[in-house]
Length: 84
Image (cartoon, rainbow, N blue to C red):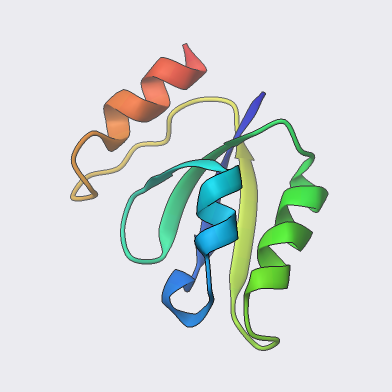
């Protein structure tokens, strides 16, 4: 299992299927931690399939918790539990 940091505009797509098949922690409106056994490329292309053609998208693997503040409650606990 790998953890990824992803940026995409979820409000511009029907993310119902994505939510059902993905373990994710929303950090803000457009930023997510995602837990997946997929490769970065497969996850990227799966998310890309839910978005409009011109929508921005970033998917990056994480090997440790990034430094951050001001994001959704529970985000640091969520990532630390998965990367410890």
